[in-house]
Image (cartoon, rainbow, N blue to C red):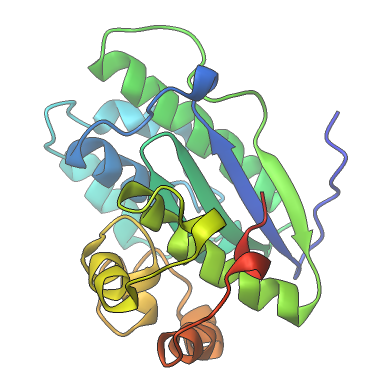
Length: 225
């Protein structure tokens, strides 16, 4: 049984990886499908079977578009996210009773259905139940927000968590070009603005701007796992 009891109005770090550490996003279509799922399934009335309206070759049907044009009843506020080849990180605020559990169940089931259909496979895709950590103190939150946005650095500097970042201009450019996170939205470059909660951007963007203005000497406090 899950130990975390999700409370409305509170923030939680949600993360998981592919079963046996396998890749869960193999190309741009998979990443786009996951981002689309973040939007569509963040709605009390959305259902997992809507994934069947997605053409596995990349074309999205008008059924989905008609659905997302209506006013949504959000389950969570998506404060930040990052999609990596074999795992993901979400920073969520629950806004409806049971919202995080319902949202993550729909995301996990819906994306797995899509992935298995596209790649002609069966069975589970994610490594057990998603993991969750309550985000309480402001300092922990600011470190976590930066950590989530720094995750893609693994792709070009695998040892950055141990050795630190040597070339910040290079890293900033790389993160600016990396599409599959909320980082671009936080620095004012609209990427997936319909996914990230607008109030969260207004409230928390300064955390991101602050570390961008300073070359951090140590990132030890950002390493949470």
